[in-house]
Length: 259
Image (cartoon, rainbow, N blue to C red):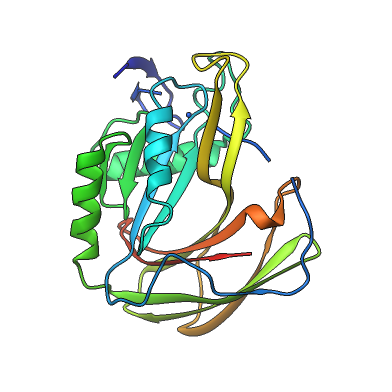
């Protein structure tokens, strides 16, 4: 595992530790909406949310990207691939990177007393680990799923149209001091990397976050919201993910649905 140390000013944390990820895009309109189609099942188990912080410029990330992909169809697991931007000046600019995703990682690192590195995986906002550590990820997922959920979040339907998607969902339970995070993700992407540490390689990524929006206020019970669909994405390759997250970063409920 390769480590390189860099330094950042305060909007880019003090000293960060890096290891080192991937993807691509298309678009089409669909008129009517999907029924709820998700790997989240009503089994009484808590949902495990795996957030991988990765970059196409980092040679240590592809194994973590591949491992994340094996969780995409597992029951009561939701995966998200956040492409950070701090590798972009090191030979290859990741087309899916965004500074807001780096900031999300910095926030987790501060709360968890952790370094910032890639590939870094955060589970339900409460535990962090190397994104390619299969044994630790598996045991953490089992632990999270054994817990009783504090709240319930359910996507009832999603309706795309006019470059937006309308999401109808319900919320219940202990939701005080919570926000709702909404992600539009590309389910699978492939990118030919032409420079940097992964130059010459074609990389695959899963559930790549393309839009990430926070809704500070929502209703107990039924809700509806419109979210922009990023340009250039095939609507058949999009999922919607909702995360109910406390102010201590704990994710207490989550759901996902296909467009």
